[in-house]
Image 1 (cartoon, rainbow, N blue to C red):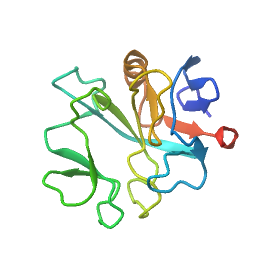
Image 2 (cartoon, helix red, strand yellow):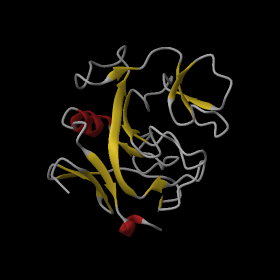
Image 3 (cartoon, rainbow, N blue to C red):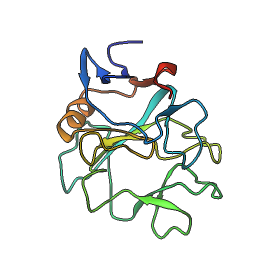
Length: 169
C-alpha cells in the first residue's frame, strides 16, 4: 500500500493522507461480486482509465478521455463486449455515459473484471459523483463533486483502489 492508493475505510475513501466521505454499493462490499447485486467488490483494483464530460469541465488529467454523445458501457452478460465502453446504437443492455444528470461528468474506471471480463462477475464499477451524501450506489464508489475532482487531478495509472475484507457486511 502506498499513499497514492485509494483505500476504502469505514470512515470514507483515504487518499494521500486525507479521508473523503463517500458512498458505496447499496448492499455493502463483497468478495463474491455478481452482476446486478448492488455490491462494491472487495480486492485491490487497478485504475482502468478516466472519462469526463468536456462540455461540463476541463480535462482533469492529460490521460482522461472525453465522454462523447453515444458513449455507453455494456452491462449485458450475453455480449462479448460485456463490461467495456461501446457506442450507440447498441442492442445489448448498457448504461448511458453521457447522462442528463451530473453523476458521470467525471468517471474513474475501476479495473474490476476489466479489461478481460468474465460474464456475470460485475460491470461498470466506477468512482463517480454521488447523487447526495449517503445515497448508495449500484456497486460503485461515489464522492462529492469537489472531492472527486480533487482526487482525479492527483491520481495516476499506478494508483489502486483497495477495498479490504473488513468492509464486507
